[in-house]
Image 1 (cartoon, rainbow, N blue to C red):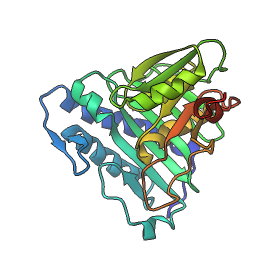
Image 2 (image 1 turned 135 degrees about the vertical axis):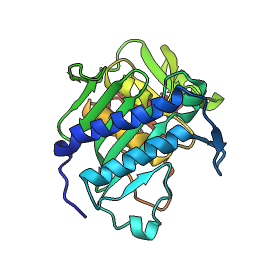
Image 3 (image 1 turned 30 degrees about the vertical axis):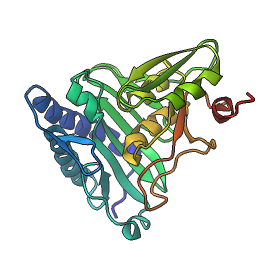
Length: 271
């Protein structure tokens, strides 16, 4: 497996995300077919076009490093369990938002080392808004191609909390738990952009109950952690990747202020 320094390849990965975004937008501007996968989730030709770009270009910059992607068959656990480093990709996160044409979908590319996300790139193709981070080196945002890169930081959880949530996945249970936060305001957003608004200090917490996959969270987790936040399971443990056969995440809390005991506040009725 080839050697790779995350900080040395970040600019190239950002460029790959923008290439994938171009492929997505070419289809977004046209009529496109929607296909139901075996798990009843939708996929479009844009998902597959972005997948092709990313898979090809990642092999160009890092030959031999394997890729796990939503739109490609994952290697069996007997093989994956030996991997120390690999790419984890969602070529089009928020396919439902893509189909609705609301612009709230992203390209997500992460590099995983020893079960941890050490590089993350999240790009919103419609706006061009890009978020990127490398472990130990902070996180930044580039709002349009060619614009300055701005360092981003999360904010302290003070006053009226801002809570973000899924636009396409809602339910009674999360609303009930969020009431335990006291006074707060909520807003819905598609894809991994929910993590990014927390990372840039425009929201405080995102509670996700129900299934997500590892490629849905890995890139944005790196961005949020490097901006000062955290992605935790409901027991308060940081997310780790490729630790078992399943690629389905546990339920989680993404937060901007990790000094708060979010698990206790949300899950303990006595708090």
